[in-house]
Length: 114
Image (cartoon, rainbow, N blue to C red; front, side):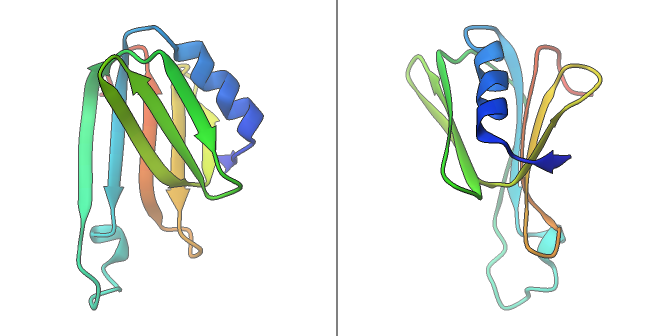
């Protein structure tokens, strides 16, 4: 993965617009932050959520946030720092803390994730 370049990520988000896509969205401070015992453990997870969005936007100056506008609502993630397009054409975006530990994963694919 490489650091986010807003314009490049925006182009990738636009390429999936108005298509049926599969979303993987995971946020956690659980296993990835087990050293932070004094904090409450929280997380959210969806894999292969089948959606369509009419608008996708990346905002911020880093870490970044992304929102996907659907017909009757939004999907939103923040704290994003890195990205890549993999060999299967999937858009993989992640947020890593200053120590490099994963805090959020936001992935889009035209085929279901394994």
